[in-house]
Image 1: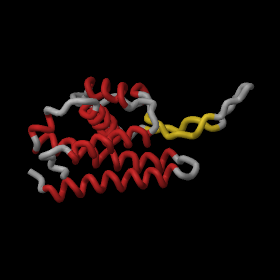
Image 2 (image 1 turned 180 degrees about the horizontal axis):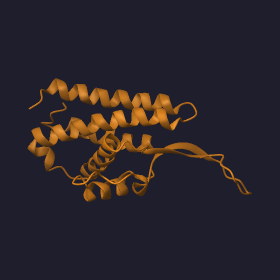
Image 3 (image 1 turned 30 degrees about the vertical axis):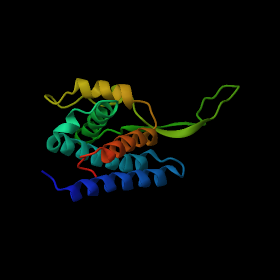
Length: 165
């Protein structure tokens, strides 16, 4: 079992990665830079989720949207780690061709659709994780998803008996 300081270290690392994502998105919204901090945050959140699942039986019994969100995040983290796809894309802004009347949407770095990801390695398919990804993450802004993950981890941290507190 990990010691509580390691849980806090991982939680702080997740929060720091989110702050770097905000810095990377403050400019033109470079998908490459956003990918690095997004996947760093996903790595730390996934590591925390897996450790809590292994070390805290009460964590496994939690309900709400958090467990599915974390499962979807694990799905995309695994794809990014093992198949190395670009799992985020830039949307909005001016695009050609444009039609009148023109509507300029804000530039957002979003998670790609699941169908744009390469297939999993043989024997490592995760249909339930993919379904959670599609339901909770696909097409949404990376910042919004990681805010949801942060809320889930914050809720867990404030739960009596949590290993994060």
